[in-house]
Image (cartoon, rainbow, N blue to C red; front, side, top):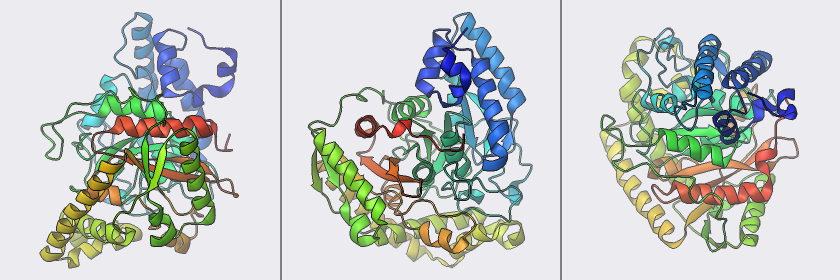
Length: 472
């Protein structure tokens, strides 16, 4: 097996999933060589980035040798044969601990793969390890936990977003070409926004959550994180599908999400939700300018862009908060009563308010949630896709708690956890400080193919998939 000389000279770690899978299938690339390149990259950069809680390099290399023998014999397990993947450490991987980045679950050994991990393995992917997260997917970049927080490869003095922090950091830095994250209030799309990659929160119920430690049963999603739109669609095809043992799983067939990737934006109706970043929560000027640039680029590609109004971000955030904290208290209440000191301060502070919410609060929030779902459905009856902000600011420094506390809630991601619609975040440009800026696209339920179509049109027009952090 061989690869071209440029790739051999150190670019394997930035090969796309799509290109690497094709090269392995055509015997132009060895899964062992691909894995070795990523393991070397991890060895060099992870001491700075802290993307991993637990590396599993020996097992990954052994699996790559098996994948190479299979590929040589013409036996491919699936479309991700031999491709490395990182797994957020609230998702079970058999034989590895699921710690949720918390002392509470230190040493908690998983006995079976989560369904989404099992599906990735069935498609041929190879797990390289467990990735940093905010504690129980709700804390923040914390320094009082058993493992350090992940950092942003564009500037390690800055945070990478969360809670799928190691997933975002590692994909952007080329430690692995794809990762699994979870998203309850934006936790796939926040690191995608901060690290300049593609992160998808699929339609609620499209991807099984069995084997994933819950935060909020009503709002939790599992989603793919990659460097390109095509890779994200390919990964979603591997993990989507009905799971009758997950009560929240949707009884719909998985789709062919790459079908419309290159059809472009011509003739599409796009609703621009300006009030999110202009009046509800005014964004940094660079964020606003980048969103306008995305809008104009899609217009130039032939899309019909019109303004759309939804309920305010304040309302969406309030509904999300009441549902999340109520359900999270049901999960964590016993530990918070008996082991409060074993939580980091950020997670403890975010979880405790659930103790003071009543049944009336929860019922009222769910009633308003139903109205919000109807409002977004009505908007998407008029347009094919919504365009809106993701983060209102680029990532701040990780060592400034006041700035982290101020900027983390400044986002437009939680509305689509509340409503369950598929939402994708990706780079819209770079700030004057060299940090990623972001845009978010939203589609009708189970219309991820349309979401990928618009995202790919922007990606192709802008070249954002070719931008790399300066870390090496």
